[in-house]
Amino acid sequence: VPRASEAYEVSEPLRVASGLAKTFLAPIYALEAPLQAGTYDKEAVRARIQRDLASSPVVVYSYSLSPFCTQATELLDSLGARYQAIELAPEWLPGMLPPDGAAVRAELGAMTGQTSMPHIFIGGKSIGGLYSGSPGLVPLLESGELPAKLKAAGAL
Image (tube, rainbow, N blue to C red; front, side, top):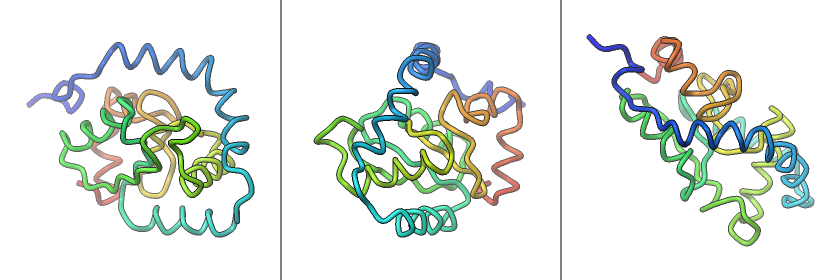
């Protein structure tokens, strides 16, 4: 029986791009997200996020045009995990991210320190993104911990 990490082929180019993005873009995203969101009701957005997290064992905040987000949902699909994908926008670029998506992105950053997508929660806890975070979806897969986490959350 192959391990879960052997059943899903990880994109090495995306892994490299993720590392570069985390190193060079994460500090810019952290400054940019609240500016893009502007003024919003922080309590209402945080309550929305809490409702989202209670709605499914796994929640994936994502952008529909992001290859990182696509790979995250494909990986979850390959494992048969039950999850809810919440599309914030096609992409984070100005003009593509509506005000409510910008507010959720900014509030996720305030709550967890991560403004990049995908932002994945298992059992209501942030695990980060596809390749990075605490520890990230692919690192959990590669360590063999992902199936147990998904099962404990009721996603498998």
